[in-house]
Length: 467
Image 1 (cartoon, helix red, strand yellow):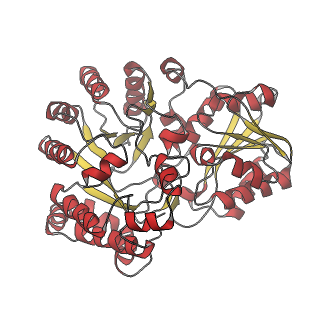
Image 2 (spheres, one colour):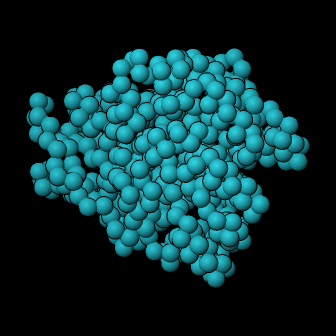
Image 3 (cartoon, rainbow, N blue to C red):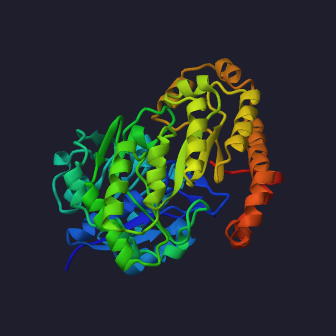
């Protein structure tokens, strides 16, 4: 009988979501698919193991619910994908499951990679952890290879000792081509009704066509400093990606959009993908992350090939701040890009950061003005809190309290929260956005009444617990 593995994104608090490049309590009820955990589970299932997949936050499962699932399933191995905000809770819950069952467990994923030793020291029962890509180390661990021989593994042979093994090369394009389609795995193991985001049609599905980021040096980004590090982009072949699109088109016809979750979709690859997709006659709509530097010609081609939305990190409206965070773009270039994308008929989901190093109250208000000028279809104004392991965290950690105050013009966390609320109110209660609602009342209002109610309260009187 094959070994049984339980893959777990554990419970935490209402509206919490850890399946992204940062974890947060979502105002909009957003739940992306548990993509990295999903690829590993699909990989292990393909190797002949029996797999159970539990995404507790998306399904609103309690700790008792998961304990019952665990008890009924009786796994031989537990794979735990922790978050950053939830890490102490995740450690405690994993310990309790292991303590009651005696089942070995491993921590995986980018949030573990932020501070692997913290997890290993804090946990009383979990003996293993894998930062970075974790499919092959997990396979080797589960099939019984000696821990000391497994690259990219942390392990504790005894409570007082933590061993860090050598890292391993990143997975290549051909190796990624050999993986089973994560869309197929999700269709068999998850109920898509639990996964929604305001920027994508419902229902949608997430996939990756490559790992790493071709830019790879933004100072605030978690995955490029913990998962696949630096300027590395290992991509599946276009033919393999189109095979998955064809699978979705034929086997999952209810899917209205495929969200390509590569850290950024490079322009040359976008053109190659679009031309091949058009040649194959694949109709499935799609969206992706891009840097705000594509030409109008490429954007027009993407629209022709069925692209719906571009997820774009604008971050700041101040060129000095953009330079400081290694964004590699200017406000002027990003403004041109936004206009070109809209001229091509593409929607933009804009990500803006409130409180980056070097920002002042005035520059944040300039950012809000700019967001209302370039008018992305949807916008997120995230309060910036640096992750350990990123260059900006190291930079800010080396500063004195006086330096930090000067950089933020003595802006407190309450000030930043207030400015974030101002940003949301200015954007979503503007004349241009209300005009959009009148043109699309069901899509932008009637279908989102519950979300709008929660967001309205947070914009005005309730504390915004975004991070």
